[in-house]
Image (tube, rainbow, N blue to C red):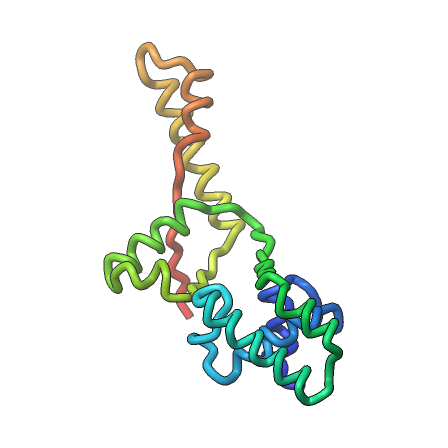
Amino acid sequence: MPTAFVLRPKKYYSKSLDNLTIAEMAMLAGLPKAPSKYNPVANPSRALTRRNWIVGRMHELGYITKAQYDEAVNSPIGINLYKEKLEVNMPYLAEMTRASLVERYGDQVMHGGWRVRLTVDSKAQTDAEAAVVTGLIATSIAMVGAGLKQMMSLSRTFNATAICLLPK
């Protein structure tokens, strides 16, 4: 079985292929014909129509019973997208990336099913953030009338991003 098809259940339903319902299998079976057109996230109504057609064909050809058919066509899309566990949460980096892409390509970025992958050295990122906090604390000590305690509580609201260029 092609690797992409084995990975899709994990992406769309957060479970393995052998744990899918008939409705979920039919939804995935509809994707290869036109992945963008029948994408259940981007086009749920088209995906549902395609899924129900596939379930109908399964019933017509005798692969499933009438009861299984009824259950499948009455099932919701049930998408439960797999969420990767992030090593470090960097919402400001995500927002900078989003803003840059929208500026360059327009609003289609937000609703066009785009996938963007960023590679970030989380240790370097964490070290950069610590350096900024340390600098803020040092600045607060030097400032007249600014208390260390007040600046420490404010430093948790600041964000920093390090851009490291590594020669090959």
